[in-house]
Image (cartoon, rainbow, N blue to C red; front, side, top):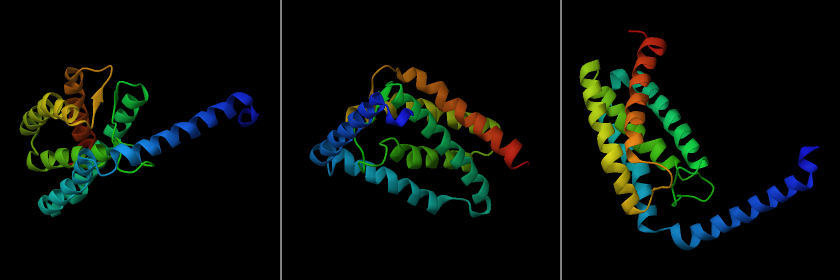
Length: 181
């Protein structure tokens, strides 16, 4: 049985030790640091803005688009962190993956507001291209400078097409397969 093997017991022991180290690091260096407070704000403020600005007549389709974005960016971030392409050194809680703060608030809200305010394809593409440039070449370097994101084996220029393509596919998916217009 796999779980009873000596090798797996060593893996479990190493994971236990890693979690203890991460918890001690969180208590000593992350909790209540400036970056920690910034992540609290990034988790709360975008949703408050969205709640104030959302077009209530289109809430379902906008939320569907936002959930698509949330799912895609979380999966892509998890993959990038797992492959050690980049890291997020600050966590809100030691039991919550650090990527969730940006992926579950800031990015979905930004993209939902663009989706809402630029419903036509041409204006949507222009707005998302500008947003992708800003996220890849301003947002990511700022997050690095501020200490909440570090690239290990990644270049910001690689982020640009990913930011753009995920939104284009999402708009097409939501409007053509989920909510046919």
